Length: 486
Image (cartoon, rainbow, N blue to C red; front, side, top):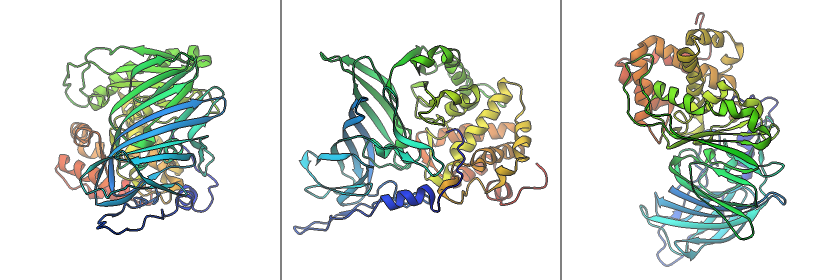
């Protein structure tokens, strides 16, 4: 995500707002007949969003079937969720904000449903045993209402003049489908969207089908097989012009700081889209996406997904860019080369390697910011050291340590981005270019399509460097005060 500044936030901020809305789920008491399971937790105790996500199960796959009417704003959906129980379950929760729930089933049998705030509790007819795979299906409908963050930024299902755009960091995805909405529970997705005639419907991954009904309505089917955190799921509906680029051919995945090691494999296919009124103005930069991805492969290693791209929407829909998986979303005002490099770098840092909790967000934003610096150094002749010194001099970057934002309202503040990038540059200067390159690339391999913590990164960096780096972390990652010299 491009940096957002949270100013004038009310006490408690977004974390408190979510906590107040997400009440403890009730109505699921243990019955007779040898019931052994217990309800899964209504929240994962994230340091900033304790009620976000749910315990007792791990989602493997979401199949979302959606019908959207832009004229009324009504969304009808069915979420078919495949999950594995991590405990004996008598009931389990899904995060869902607003919308009206219809039928609910677990493993094909009707399941009792209870709503309390943003918690939807399902009680299956029979307990689910630990380790068992189960399937929950929830039908729902209504006019989704976006979430408004303390800084005034909106997230969730955002209506546009002719459609909608769905973005979800950190909690907005619960406004348009029920699920386990915490970044620690990643899953594969299939998203089927039906919209009125003449409109385009885009989502994550590869479009596997597009069909037109006799009444003119168009249904698109999108397949995203790699694990994805729910905040990275997206849907875009409206009048869009799309362009598909074929892979640019084999790329070298060597880095300017290490010997090249060609993979011999082509890069990802690229699909870009822009609202029709913006298509001509954005065409040149959208055409650069394949080349930017290829250059980033040289810096970081193979692109982690089968497809890449970008979607450009009109200003006023949202005021920040977001790294939605495989196809980042940009308002026109943020669609520039630097932001494009940043959001595409997130496909490695944040989307493939995803933070285990929101406290670890600097692993997304600090790394994507440093990716800008590396890209500028390699391809725009701007030394990373120069950008480091500029960031070092800015007072706002020292408001708090990047690994310890004081509240949820500070997650998208300058230290997470700029000081996070400074941590990486000091690591590079401490261990040398070749070792740093090994750390960066190895980190992406070791935690590919998985979750990681700050402690995982510091331990991994020390293992590759073969030395204790505690003094570096103490000053740059966790230190309260700015050092006397950069």
